[in-house]
Length: 438
Ligand code: UD1
Image (cartoon, rainbow, N blue to C red; front, side):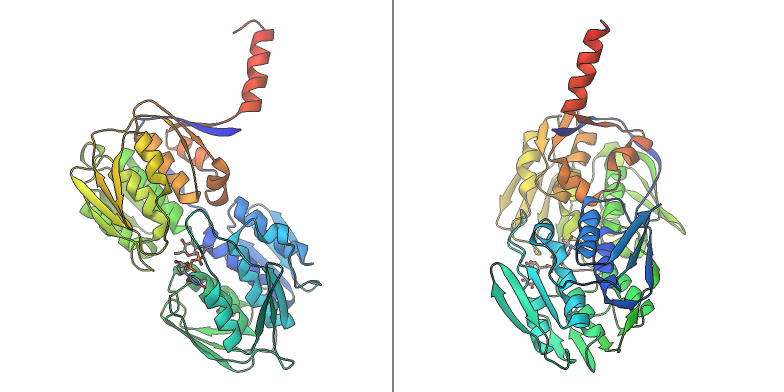
């Protein structure tokens, strides 16, 4: 089993560069399948498990996908299947965003339905309602949704989303690209990743206007082609480093972080006493007094409000805050799995409904803890860096889904953190024994 071992208490200092955004590159890779001609080159693609899954999914339906030096080249002319293998789709919920582009270009798509996940049920009803409004029929068969456009192709429609779902906005936006006529998405998600997707779609020949606002207009075009695109920096990774820098830093420069994408976090960190400097190429954070935040009340919501993907990390940061803090989770139902693990490190937290109430303690103590999902894993790493003594984090596959080289980046900031594979340890012990050094 692979574990992360952290010796806590070491202050982070220096520069760290944020990678391309996971949540932008996933729909962008899916969108690349809309091109019936030409090559797409996507730059600044992070090295993540989720990205590898999406590349495999696109390759499995016939596209040529090559990765080299942080870029991915895709030729989607040769796609021959509209049914990505179940085994690939089930590994990652976000794979469902291949539905929109395939339906739009080929008039049909069969995609395994994503199940629930550790952070609660995550239905796709809004995606499907959107496709139906554009003339598609949807039927569920053996755990997959079979989508079929009318003979003449999808048509434009006015679609109001009950919830500004990130994934539904992406899927409908992509389905509308090759539809006949205009599609208007109202109450659309405004996340920067959706703006990035729209920019790539437009570079491919689509006509998407209004991404980043709550009304997106898409005028269908006849065909799309490959295009070059550089992915925006990952605001959640940036926020994770800023939070760590505020509680256990000594001046951390987060290169590539875009302040406009994380205004809500910056406002909260400043309210809690951290000093933030916004520079052209990144953000510097200076630590709060004695590494203890002032107490905060935080509520997660859709962009531009405080992101649910930075909730767990903020809970970790507030465990040693002065006074009592509250964090309300309004986006997902069951996103407090990290709380039980943080309690094992001495945190005083209790949950009331969808709110975590955190009584700040002076310090955390190291323990063996398990990541239950991606951002919960990041929270445990922050807690481990803050804690006295040694912390072991298990469940690293969750962290590998969304943080590119987290250990290496933290090491470059001076953290005492390493990955250990039990097999490697066993081999090292055997070698030491043989050479008599143990
Ligand atoms: C995306 C992000 C994820 C982030 C989330 C919210 C990716 C790959 N993932 O996930 O990291 O935490 O946005 O910012 O970009 N909902 C429905 N019906 C639907 C779709 C969604 O009820 O058809 C609900 C969900 O259960 C959830 C809420 O809407 O409660 C928001 O979900 P959504 O914005 O769709 O999140 P994802 O796109 O899955």
